Image 1 (cartoon, helix red, strand yellow):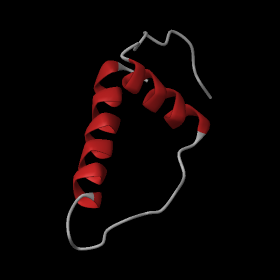
Image 2: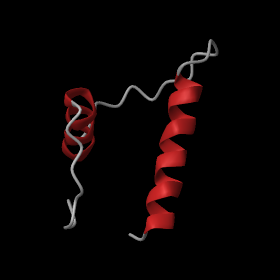
Image 3: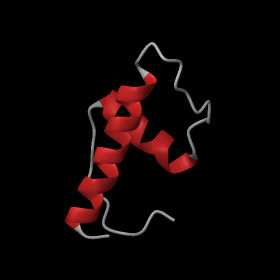
Amino acid sequence: MNVDQHIKVAQWHMEQARMHATDNGHSCGCPANEHDQKAIDAVESGNIEEETACAV
């Protein structure tokens, strides 16, 4: 993906998070997949490194 595509995916995730945080009960209930968990762990540890290869 290019930079613009990464930003669009991030924006989609931010909007999903905002909707999940509302009082209307919006929730997917999906567990984090391996790639998402890697991102969560990196953010929580403060150690975000650039990915230079496809993670799929």
